[in-house]
View 1 (cartoon, rainbow, N blue to C red):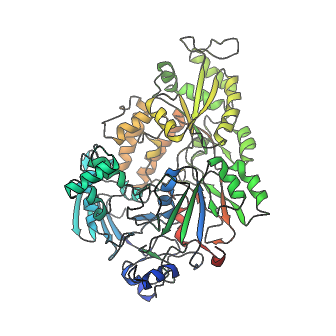
View 2 (view 1 turned 90 degrees about the vertical axis):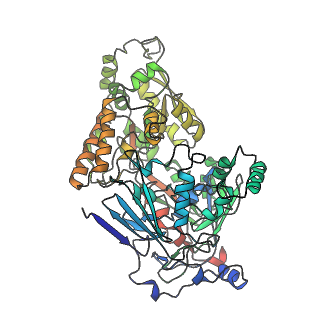
Length: 633
C-alpha cells in the first residue's frame, strides 16, 4: 500500500473532462444573470471557486424548470442533503473517493489527512468558506460540553485518542492520529456526512463565546429555549435543511421552515460545480418537495404529478406504475439495489423480557426461525420472482462473497427447525399447537415495523404461517419510525423488521462496521452499538464471546494495512455472522422502482440505488439533471 496518497481532481463524475478549467468560458443560469444585472448578486467569476469542480454527464443540459418530488414527512427535507451530495470528498460512479468541495486531499497511512479547500469557495449566502469554519466546529461545537456533552463524535477518536487538528492556513487543515483511521474519508463521502465544518459567520450569533449577550438572551427568550446551547443546536442542522437561514454548500437550499405541505428548494448561486462546457450547476431552478402520506405517493406518481421518485415506491407498485405509463409522460425504471437483504428480521438481544432475551441470544433459536421461512414463496408472491433467497450478507457482486454466506440456514426445513426448538427444551404446546416458554407463557412474538410500507407486513404474513407450523405465533405491530426505533433501543421491542446491511457490495478496503456492534440503529444489538458510539458512556458492554470476537476483528481491521490480511479479517467476520445469524435475512437482490419523467435527462437508465455508498440519487449528481423542454416547465 502506498503510504502517502495525494488526490486532486476536477470533480465527482466518472466522466470528468480531461482539460483544465482555464480552457472554459463560464456561463450561468438566465435567472441568476438577471439577479446579477439587478445588483443582487456578484458576477459569476466572483461566485465560483478557483478552480471549480468540473463534472461530466451524458449530455450538456439546459437551464430552468421545477423538479417535483414527494416525501412522506416534513423531516424528509434532509433527503435534499442526501441527493445534493456536495461532500468534502465523494464517491464517483466506480466508488473511488475523489475531491468535491475540496480541491485536494492527502492521506498518509490513514493517520494524517491534509485537506485543501478551493480558493474563493463561498457559502450559499456569499460568505467565504474557509478553515475558520472547521476550527469553529472543532473548538466551539464538537469540544464544547454545552453543545456536545459526549465530546467529539466517534469518527474523531481512535482507541480513545482524539484527533489532532491543525489549521495550516485559510485553505488547508490537517487531522491526524497516531493510529490509522480508515473510516475518516469514507464517512465524509457518506449519505449523512459528519459535517466537520459549520458556517461560523452565521452560528456565532447564537454562541455564548461570540454573541452579544443582550441579543443572545433576546433570541433565547423569543425561541423559548432553555439556554444558548439548545438555541444554537436548533439553528445548526446542515443535514436536516430545516433552517432556511442556515447557509449551505449544497446545490439547492430550502426556503420554507417546517412543518409545511410543500418545501421549495432554490438554486445555490455560489455552487462550486460546473459542467464540461463551463456552465454553473445546477441546471434546474427549483426542487419542489411535496409532503404526502407515503401510501399516496405511488398514486401521485402514476398520475404524472412527480418527475423523479424512488422513495415510498416498492415492487408491489411496479405493475400499477407500468400501466400508468401509457397515459402519463414518465417511465418506471428498475435499478439494482445494494442492500445485503431487502427484508431482514432482528431479534432484539437487549429485549427487557428475560425469557425472550435468553432465547434471542441462543443461536439455535435464531437458526430455527431462519429455517422456518419459505423464502422462495416470498420471492414469488411479493417480488415477482426477481429476488434471491438470502441471509443478510454481502452480495454476489462483492469480491468477498461466498455462497455459504448467502445460503447457510436460509433454506426451508421445518423438521430441522422443530428439532432445534425441541433441543432447547421447548417441547410443551398448548391446544392451538403454540409452544410454551419455560414459565408457561405462549411463545408469541410481536414483530414491530416502522409502518411506512405494506411490503414488510406482507412478508410477515407469509412468515406467520411457517413459523406457526413450528409452534411460534407472531403478531405485527406498525408504528412510526422514531417510535419504532426508541422502542427497540429501550428493550420494549421483541423483534423488528427492517432492511439488511446497506452496503452488500463491499470490498476488503471498506469498513466492516455494519457487521459488527458499532451502531445503536443495529436493531439486533442496539445497546452494544450505543456503547461503542458513546465511548462507553451509554449502552452495554458486549457480553457474548462471538460478538466480542466480531468487535476485536473490527479493531484489527482498522489497524491493518495489507489488503490480503484485511480480506482474511473480513472473511472471518462474515463467517461469524453467517454461523450466528444475528439478523435473519429473507431475500436480497431486489429491484427499486424509479419514476423518471420523459423529459428529465441525464438520469441513468440503469444504476444502483444504494444508501451507502451512493446516497440514493446523489452519486449520479442531480445537479446535472435537466429538462429538455424547459419552456414547458
